[in-house]
Amino acid sequence: MVLTKKKEAKEKVKQDKVFIVIAAYNEGKSIIKVISKLRSNGYHNIVVVDDGSRDNTYELAKKTGVIVLKHFINRGQGAALKTGIDFSVEKGADYIVTFDADGQHQAEEIKDLLVAVKKPGIEAALGSRFLKSTNIPFSRKFVLKAGILVTWIFYGLRLTDSHNGFRALSRYAAKKIDITSDRMEHASQIVEEINKKHIPFVEVPVTITYSDYSLSKGQSALNSINIGLKMIFRKLTR
Image (tube, rainbow, N blue to C red; front, side, top):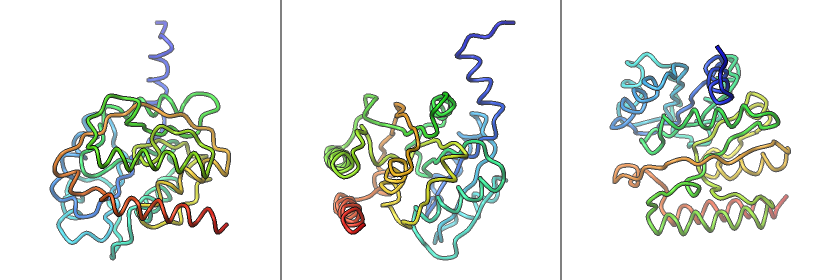
């Protein structure tokens, strides 16, 4: 049987060792549903990093049978992702997908990121909500667009979405990117590392679902501005 190129790419992705890394902090209301959606789409190497939650996130995730790692204090999303990524590399992951715990990301779109990162010469696939028609709240859209401008001015990278946590990394990229920012500014640092270490990347259209729950868990405009200022300060002091 002769496979089309698209089918060949999908078959190749299925054969690779893909790990899904989820940083979770007080996500007891959503973690079961997120894990269930990932499994229904064929992903079984799921690593949940409980970042010192005060609710039952750890217990609920543990009951599903996925891999659950735990920070005994809340260190921040950046630290949780680093823990999960390092663990996945140690366990032999070929590709690592970072996925939010609040239900914003679509498990069905992981395959698009994986097909993209499998292309010759590509080591990272970065999700972009602005390459798809998404109903983004105005305040969130304004802050995100400002982040895109800062990324272009300070790093020379023309991205359409500079602060999206939905991404796929090859093993090579995961080992090269050094996340030292424990909290939310890690997303900007990942982009900085991609630029500094000349990691070839591509942006991939993804859908971000905004719900009252996910918006309540997200960063406020003030916090986002604070992250941007930290990013600028880090760049200027190097």
